[in-house]
Image (cartoon, rainbow, N blue to C red; front, side):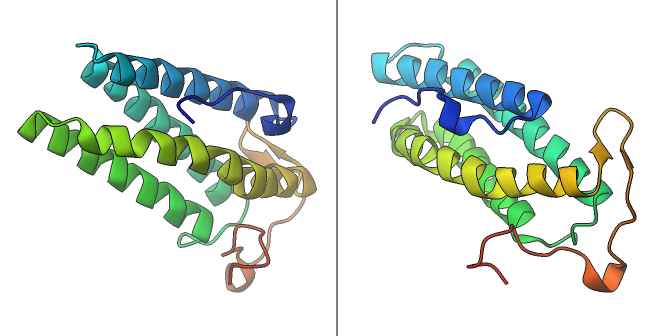
Length: 160
């Protein structure tokens, strides 16, 4: 698989997040096409993807913080791991002029994103709806869980 197609199954019925996800998919595919073509725009396009991903995850992190997720929840941990790998790949590519780790990362991101969106992001959107969270104001219409009952999982039964 060398590209990711946006489909209705990726839509979470949350306009802001769906737009951000569509942008991620477009940036991922543009970078992937340049990578496969051996274009000299690979690094600048990757920087665009990385910057967008950092902002995308920061947006979600803000929503999680505002709606009662524990700081060390598994959704946030996954964001941190993905960004760490993306940054390491960039450092390697720039230091060694070696794009092989990028070639390895592309299919991993293509495979990772749908599962992340369909499980973790869908759970976040559901939770935001349950507490009446308005991303525009950062306010919840319903009271949040207390600190002792903050959400630490992603919503999956496989998380603790």
